[in-house]
Length: 379
Picture (cartoon, rainbow, N blue to C red):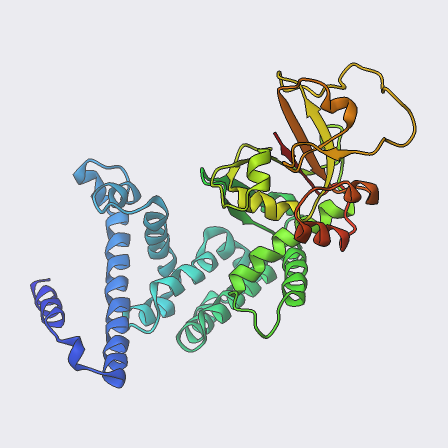
């Protein structure tokens, strides 16, 4: 061990700035082979310590607990190390290639499922020679990319149990949406093979349709835009299930002054789920909506709650009160209310004609034919 430490000290003293491309690649290749050999020795030592219950001499029951406590490994890393040592006992060819530096620790983990007790019992029941499988896996691991090795292992395990368990895609699907204080969202999830294929196909079609020669977005940005566009299309189509007795739509609450003011206005708008947005972003969202007037009393309730409509038929001509960009009818304008609210909806052509949003937004709305995709309330 002292010689190993001295060798590492010598490597650390090398001046890498004096070396260039071919020299650095040659050095890296030798270091990777040495890393594989050192990893093989670690796995071999862990396996021997596991067999002899060496961890009990340090007051810990298993090698996994020793690795977590004394070596400060994660639970997953400790389990992989112990599992790899157990698998190599039944795969001597892979173990020899690992010790020679031809196979990496990651490749050992990829072939480890072949040597589980259940897999070995199924192989014995079908009279499969595990030694031949071991030799084949060693050749693939030493000569083929990692993806090819995982495909070979998966193919072998599938042939051991051709029927396999009944597919249940719901057990393989999970999605978590986390909202941050600044209003942004983080998505984490897992999909089954077929479900992921459908989602990827839908997103790829939208991303490809929106790409042009001058597009400077990265692929990740195009995919992010595609998933938002997919939600936009679903909301605008109006085919989504009813959510709490109404068609699903997005709500933004924004003050009238911020709606009319061209300034950015940070933290001026509030979404229906409690996030805060800037006034500029809320005005941008208004370009995909139309406007319907709602007047609130000082308690925040619409004035027509519990009242019968005052008239039937088409509404009277409306006017803009105070030049602030808020629509009010003459009857409502005479009432001393404490607040005025304007809600943006995707709706009829008549609602578009009553809109007081900026001209650019009005033009954008006129070009669209959307239904119940979003609303903005101004107070």
